[in-house]
Every structure is written in C-alpha cells, then in structure tokens.
Image (cartoon, rainbow, N blue to C red; front, side, top):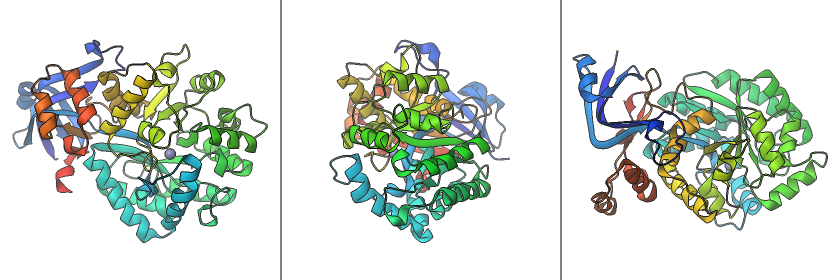
Length: 435
Ligand SMILES: [Zn+2]
C-alpha cells in the first residue's frame, strides 16, 4: 500500500456558503495533515493528530504555507478546441463556422487526437483541474483518445462523442443511427473503465435533426445513469435559429424537454438568456446551467444571471466551467475572476467563498459526484490542488497585507493562474511537477 502524508493549510467546503461570514460552510485547518492511502483520503485533521496515526513508512510532503484544497473541477469544455482558443470572431455562429468546425474535422485522425489529448491533460494538471467534463469531436477516434489518456493518468473524467447530423461541414456529420451506435460503443469501451464516465453528447439542437434527437432520447432512456451534456441559450441569433428549426417547441429549453433530456444529470452549457418558464423547467427537473464566463465575454454572448438564478423561489442548479476554446483560459481561478466581474456588471456580489465552493464541491454536486470528488472528506478520491497565493512578485507583495482567508482566496482568484498552482495530485500522485 502507498501511503502519503501531506502537511499544509487545508480548506474544504461542507455546503454552499450563505455569506462571506459563513465559516460553518467550510473546514479550515491552519496546520493540517492529510493521509492518503492508495489514492483515497484515509485521514484528515490537525497535523499532529494525523501524524500520530500515520504509519512510520508514510512518505511526508510539507506544503506549508500553501493551501491544500480538493482538485478543481471544470464542468464544460471542448477537447478538440485547444487550437481554436484565441480565434478572432464576431460571435458564436461565425466562430463555429470559421474556426471551430474546420479544426474539429482533424480529429478523424487518431494520431492527431492522441497528440492533442496529451496536451489537454497536461494543461488541466498545470492549472490544478483534476476532473473535467468535455465534448470530444463527432469522431469516435477523438473519444477513444480522450478516455485512453484519462485512463493512463488515472483521472476522473467525464466526456462524450459529439452527435451532430446537420448544419456543419460533411466531415463533422454522423447520422442518427451512427451517432447512436457509436455512442453505445464508446459507453461499452470506456464507461466505468478506470475513473471514466461517458456522457451522452448531442452538440446542440441546431446541429441535430429531430431524428437524431430521438436517437439521443433513446440513449437517455437506455442509460439513465449517464450524464447528458449539450448547449442552451447562449446567444440571441442562436436562440432564434434554434427555435425556427423546432417550431413545435414552446422555447429552446422545451426542445430538449420534449426529448426527455432535462434531468438531474443534464448539463446545459451557458443558459444565459432563459425565460422564467425555462428557468422553472430547469429547476423542476434538477437540470444544471453551466456558467462559462470567459467564453461568454469573449464571444459577447451575454451576462449570466448566476445570483438571480440561484436565489429564485425555484433555484436553478449551477456549475462553472472554462468552455475552452470559446473560453480564453484553462484556469478555474481566471474563470471565477471573470464570473465575479459579470456579477459586478449585473449589480450583484459573488464572494470568494462562493467562488471556491463552485470550483470544488459545487461542481461535484452539479455532477452528482460529491461522494467521490470536490471535498477532503474521508474515503473520497485524493484529487487535490496546492495553491500558492504568493506565486508571483506582485501577488507576494499583496500577500503582505492580506489578513484573512477570504482575502487570500480573493487575491488568488483575482491575480492567480497556473503559476499559483504549486502542485496537483491525481488519486494521491503528484502530477504537476513531473510535467
Ligand atoms: Zn461549449
């Protein structure tokens, strides 16, 4: 058995914070010990207590004065868009047609998909992200490359082969039957292998015919435990076009509802411009709106009403994500900095406890995986990030006047990026410094 004892300041959320003063919402050990046995958290608490329990041959790593937290979780991004990031486009539909679709065509070649997969996981680890939920391309080769690399690194990853059968170049189209068959094959090949989770992944209603949506509905019925991911209500032109394609539906959300795709494991990227009826439908079914702030700003898509949706009488469940390559940073710290600014523009406050809750336990709850990831609870996966709030000269200078934990968290979020990630542990194994 491999046993590792980590020492540092430990921070883990118990539940969503009610306010910045809500110190009951998290556990904070100023001199903490975390014992890892075979990739699982075996003991956690004050360092002296944990040290006394630890076997003599445990290897010990001292991360003081850094902060040890659950690994960050990214609930929406696109694995084939690593070379689409930073493309100069006016809006979503232009960006898709000009840059994204041509790039995704290259993933028919497994050598290309494997090369990008290596870079993809390197970037996640570099940025402290230990679980992510990704769209692959329409090609099964891309899903194979994505899951094989996750398995090789023993990461807990969610992903799916995209299904799309219209409104895209020929090289990116499957058919209803092919999308169904290949998704079944990806499930058979990868779901539950290592820590892999396969998601049913119709790209969005614009690129799926009603026949393909029927096939998606069949998959959702046959595999009710799987995640479902798609896009919803990102931009006004997209919404208008989508509703023209499905004139029988009441609104954009109703299209997915008609095919049985709204539920507690359904992740809807963006969901910026929802009507009250749509927000009610999301809330009643437990569906998750995934906020992608850097992407929404980059593509000029709109300001996601995070606070307003979460305090409704019927609250909408929320996840947060980078949306690479519409998003502009792999860093969840950068992501929450932009989320904060979007709430500022809406006249709302997103406090730093909220941000760190969302990046960890909140996203784990959004994925129904809080029993495995997102906290430092006993028995959960030892997927961890070690954060250094004095990682750059400018951050170190600011740290001289920081007095409280929330102030430190806010500094990390406002100025931090991959440089602030001192180490990333995947199932108890230090991965970042080996890159
Ligand atoms: Zn997306």
